[in-house]
Length: 346
Ligand SMILES: Cc1cc2nc3c(=O)[nH]c(=O)nc-3n(C[C@H](O)[C@H](O)[C@H](O)COP(=O)(O)OP(=O)(O)OC[C@H]3O[C@@H](n4cnc5c(N)ncnc54)[C@H](O)[C@@H]3O)c2cc1C
Image (tube, rainbow, N blue to C red; front, side):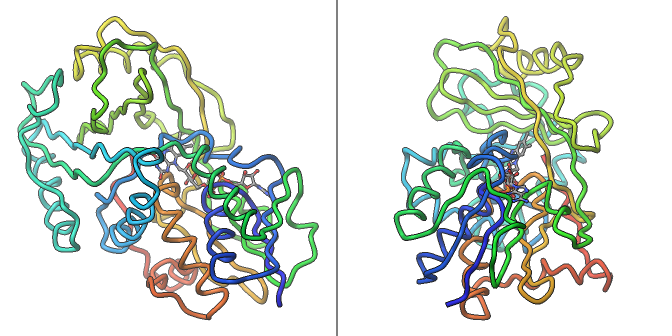
């Protein structure tokens, strides 16, 4: 049987290796040149949503939700994603996307955001909520997937450069470093940072992920702290994972305004990681050449998509086709002019 080497044990590579083994592949190596989940996966917010702006992304996210739900509440807290609009234009966008998502079976609804205790909603003109979205712990879950893959016979090798291994097929799942495999891929690293507050008394267990639609400012509960993110005013293209402390005061002020129970808190921890951006913010998935396959360019939302992608990629590699349609994600879309930008990048 052919030897398949998966390069990168972030959430994407781990899920591919796991599904390959589940489908019966007997010679799979999962190689990471550093450690399991030490790339973007170890830096991620852990948001899992189905609320995207394109049908293809909604489908990918929907497929993944079933996997997360099967893992149960220890691994996936289904607290929902709440988008708040403070302008009529913002609300019209939310409503347009809600219609698309609902047509595709996502249970997203117009809501009165007053159902979230403590949330300041005076300036909110409308909100949508999807109760089956939620949050997880990307590095913990990825380590668990790797553990299960190893149990099924996957040969897991840390501190190993995949390019140096003998193989019949190489799967590039190396996140922001996927351009280092001798193939020209339209992927650019973008630095993004997360802030975590000091512990805050009394945070409700079911506090949803809250997102301000117009500014993109968002936060979630992580244990007894809040994790905060917002895109930089000027995108920080490049691989430098540095923290910009100059925005801390602004982010804490936004948090206190939107969620007064957090007033007086401060930033206890902050870190930066890399989004692997493609020009249309969709991943590149599929054959690149003989024995070379790509699963990269997840543009800041690959954790939530990794279960569905892992399954579909494993099916394509072993059976030549997958139940989930991966055709929108082929690299040829960039030369054929069939890109379809995803607008909802948080
Ligand atoms: C700040 C931040 C917040 C995010 N928030 C979310 C979120 O809320 N929800 C969500 O779904 N996604 C989020 N993401 C994106 C998410 O982290 C990734 O898309 C997802 O984890 C998939 O990562 P990956 O497996 O493709 O790559 P990575 O996790 O980066 O893994 C790639 C691995 O490849 C290894 N590697 C590189 N070169 C080689 C080589 N030559 N040989 C072997 N190994 C190699 C690296 O060491 C690394 O471990 C966020 C990302 C960041 C940075």
